[in-house]
Length: 525
Ligand code: AHR
Image 1 (cartoon, protein in one colour):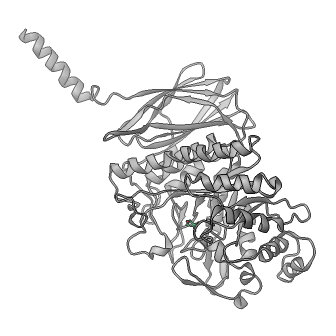
Image 2: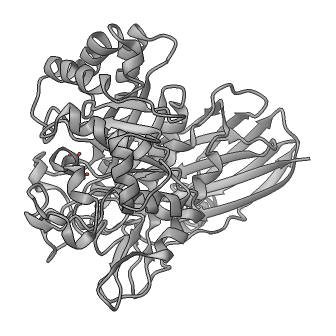
Image 3: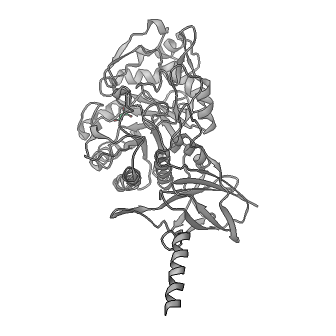
């Protein structure tokens, strides 16, 4: 009896020391149907957004040289080209409904300044205007997405902007040529207002739908340019707005509206108040869990809008355009609160990873998405600092790098036993994944482990492909709020992922570190 007891005790001590009782790595099954798939993931899902707000444009993209002249920062352009930025939305946001485009053309020193009433009431000198934006998107190799002014503008003003940009001839084309641009530009994406239920005019959906039809009627296709016209849509899960637009615009005049936008921000607050948001860094596990839980709710938001759209448009002619999304934290201490400056941690990276996987799964209806707001504002990809010659790439930037292979690839069905990550008496799926196949037959898997404590082991089976070779990268860090700074720019960056092994024909065991994003490419024979 004594011997048995001491053997049992010994066993318990050994198990406790190795952690195998409490810490056994959960195992998950994943099947990727690599020979299926019928929906293309539009590259425009990987789009971005800049607004005249804080240091996004001035002090971000647009920098003064030694002579005080503005110019584009080439290092930023190069960094965004590396992740294949497909489009850029401009000039807002709320600013779009305050912006009068004619203030921003012609010689820069003669441009009329305005007050940027939404964002800190700073003087906007209009030195960054239409020509500068179009030069930026050309440098990026991206497509422009312009948001026109409905709130304080007129149908004529918006119609003339389209004419100025895209017509070969006529009064607006002549004005453009006087300003140094002979050839019309190609402008595929056009937004008719922004958040018209709020900063874009505080309208009711019925009133906006009437205005939409009126404005959109005068947005002509000149020459070979074809406008994809996007209505200002709801925030979050407000399906009433979507349903009124589908009924009063799409059902009446189907050709007038190609997309409806929706905005979804991930913000967390202990009091539930908008002005009491939690900080970007220094959060505890509650902040990690809540951030990811809220990000996952995006799936439900999209489902609800899609259900409404499907009722009117089962053929899915109208796209759902998530033209503002991302984490919105409390402003950085010491910064101008109207400039929306925030750090960007491993949590932001996981939120981006989950959101992009969700967009991929909804690619049949979601045709574009734009993270807010590229440089120095909200969930930025890149940080700059005055007088600093280098830039900081945030963890979110690295997620876009890991995910770029999904652009224009075919979405593949996946079955995932995601398991649970529990916090207190709540739980969310521990894993989140999506997969696609490119034109060469390579399969790209992106998978996030949301559990901040435990490695998760995945048995991944690829059906319909015999991979010849696998390559992977992983993004993780020691702390949930690890982030990059000018002093330590590479604290969070992807490294080669080697924690996988083949365990059968087309079957792999993947060991996903706690709080990580992994991207794997399986190359066909
Ligand atoms: O991205 C910041 C602001 O958030 C935008 O200007 C507005 O559209 C939204 O409310």
